[in-house]
Amino acid sequence: MSHSDDSPDPGQAQAPLIEHLIELRSRLMRAVVAILVIFLGLYAFANDIYGFVAEPLMALLPEGSQMIATEVASPFLAPFKLTLVVAVFIAVPYVLHQAWAFVAPGLYDNEKALALPILASSILLFYAGAAFAYYVVFPLLFQFFTQTGPENVAVMTDINAYLNFVLKLFFAFGVAFEIPIATFLLILSGATTVESLSKKRPYIILGCFVVGMLLTPPDVISQSLLAVPMYLLYEVGLLFGRLVRRKRDKDAAEQDEE
Image (cartoon, rainbow, N blue to C red; front, top):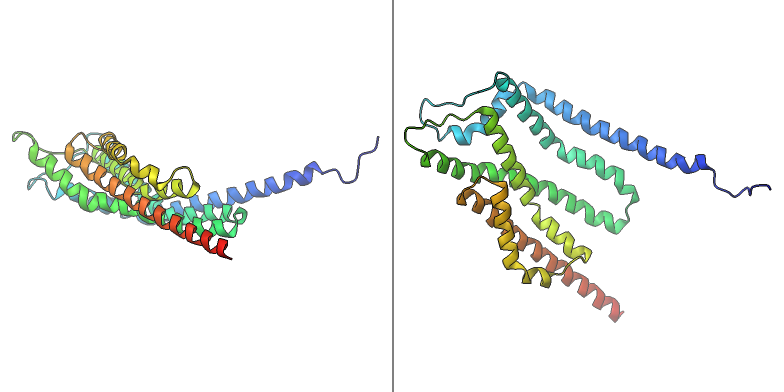
């Protein structure tokens, strides 16, 4: 029995997949190279970068106090790890640009018009969250910690422990500042409505403080410094959700009139 000439060729079917995989590998390599280039450029300033990140605590320590290294390799590994994190942090726009360039050809024009502002807003909000942690949260938090300890205890923080602590807070506040995007997308996708989310405000407030308790040190100040901005950003997401809904209702009414 002869096969039809119109039957698909398995080799042709696999060709687009192979091309996509090659493109994905290429874009991943570009992202990795960008991070490595930025890291190599910054490594000469690794100690200065660590000094900048440690400044909120160092400014509050008694005169003559300093940070310590309790492990042999900590003086090298802590600035090294921080510089690598900073390189990734700086390269995020380029990395996301590579991801965008990979997925954009498969999107419709209206999806592209919406996805690009959301992507840019996500980056800016994450940076804003990290900046808020450094310039607002750290000074208040470290002032509380350094002034509430016993008088006979000298505050001499290990550099690696300090780095892990601040990186955790950077990440927590960066992710928390993404709440408007998450709220907006939930409303836009139809997964929920503005009215439904508005009725759940008491639960949202409670959830913000629970998240603040889990992601920050066990004190009321740090928990509130994360929970309150989270709730305010949630309200911002609701506001944008209302604006989008009104625009959609207006467009639908105009179409009905036509």
